[in-house]
Image (cartoon, rainbow, N blue to C red; front, side, top):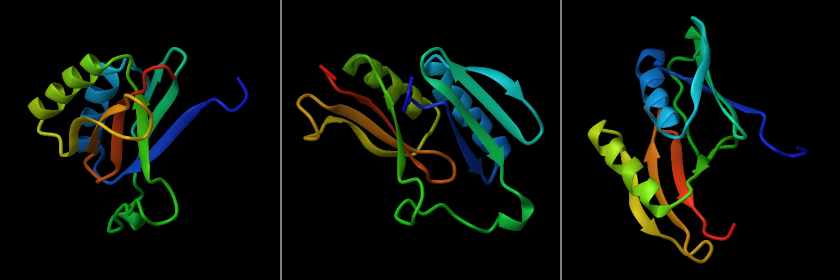
Length: 133
């Protein structure tokens, strides 16, 4: 239990655009909405913790996410297989999601296979399969 993720909260600039985006990708991965309020929505999955999106306060609306500034660079989710990633990629394409890098094998660890994509605010997200890890 020590060191595992409890939850992750992301602030979004357009809640009405981001909520359906995150609902689609998180539902695909087995998350379910467990709380929904005017200012945030919270998804939860067994053994995976919770993901929350929050409305950006009005005084911050003109700020954009920069993954190369201090803070979040990207968020990676695990997949059980390459086939899951390929099915997920097709769902992303059907929804018109911005693809940063199509599914491919990368040299991070032997057999590492991933797709990289962006949320409506440009936050880099990844679904990855690492055989044997």
